[in-house]
Image (cartoon, rainbow over all chains, first blue to last red; front, side, top):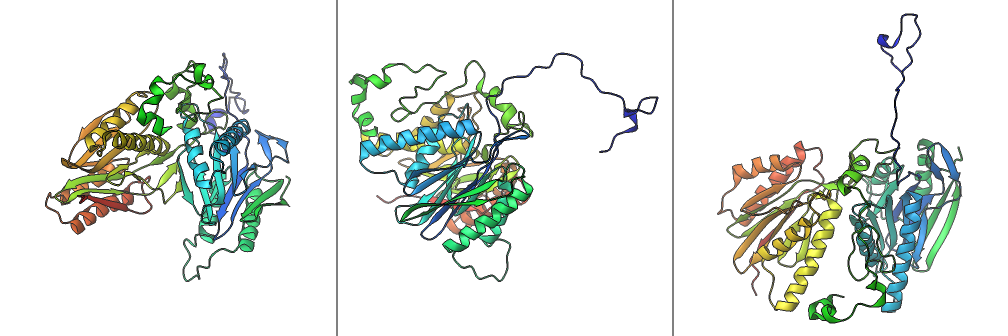
Length: 238
Length: 256
């Protein structure tokens, strides 16, 4: 750290800096609880993965708080950001899913859930849910679908997306490995389920190395026409 | 439900018990879940725009909490002899992070009306979807298509209710109706302008420069495509917040 010479007083010691006076601390309705979420869509499968660390500031509240929530047999949502808003938002989504099921006698499709979530989030445009959502699932034709959202409901369908605290580190890696961006003379093979799961594990191991809010364990939800299968993989705990 | 609204039945049917308790401005009635009527919640006692500013605008936010909303960037549209040409870039950025290079900024309100998006992505998507619903209800009630002028007026009036609360939306409603090609610019302040050529977003100045130098009313369709794409290309070259790919659409006369 560079300190200018002005900071040193006459006796050679660093001058102490005080702010004397009242400081206003406002109540902040939000907190940042960390966590990373990732979703990948394949030909006939989708993956939603999240780490399981819940932190706040310099503390870790829990090592076993996954951020993937199963909504239907074909859809899983990953929510990271403020844990309080994640819980309330998933509660509201599950209530709306039940209402739909009772009114229409069928489960909501992933596209419909995505559109509904967009309006739920926009309903709080002036006091947003501080949650970064990614929905992964199978569309009506059985193909993998990923929908990524911003905190107030802007969304679109993707092939892969990373969200949460390590998203800026993971997204470029996914662009290269799944999107084949910035690569020349490569055979662009479609992603198989085994390769995708291994890629997700590798990607989270990298994230845990470099992001303090990501680590402890990784939970992967694999969505196929047989249903939703879960895999838990340990990560760095430091 | 939309059908109930069209028939006008909900006007004289008594409200059911769930919604009889009037939701106060500050609290959303949790039992409705906004399933019937869309509800927008507002924080109590604070100016909504000022409330969000420290979270969205400052680099560090408040105690590490930064809410970055997705923003869209350069869009343009112009009228010419064959119809209306619309071109947009495809980058959406959350702060300085590029969230996606493949964002769809042209919304098909219906097969003969297009809306473009610039400003806050969520605001544009939501209000234009609501506009699509209103246009559909208009068509069902009146058995004819809504005019571009009326559609843009509906949108302008909807967002004017939320003026000063921090919405950010610059959109162009383009299409073809009985009076020929229509192009209106609608703003989050409720501003609505009719014109022959508009460009919005952070890269709009660059796009205007290219468009103004090449624009003629009697362009052919391929020439118009070329002009629009060049304008967006140059804007993405110079503006950091514009990029991705150029998406262009031409609304020509629909033969009935």
